[in-house]
Length: 117
Image (cartoon, rainbow, N blue to C red; front, top):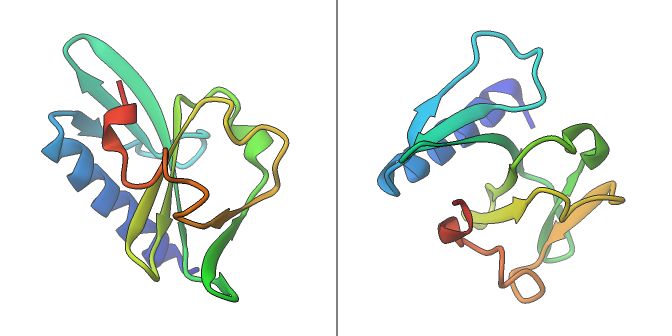
């Protein structure tokens, strides 16, 4: 995925979060493990966004070292092929090096923006 594709996923995610009432801030540098800081009603959260355009068989796949995001509150995976979002809370991806974005197996995470509290 290109750098601009990653930026597009980040901007689209920010837009979605704003629809749900979150204020969104972007870092000036990419030295942090998070892509966004979000704020709503006194609550501050960190968010990492990963977009994917690679498909194995039918489902989109994202490969990453999730361990480096252990302090992040939410990891949001964007299936750019099928235009789905998967919202994971801290720790849900521990011990994994990749994720197949299968909506049938990830129904709890699929487009579930209400997980972000």
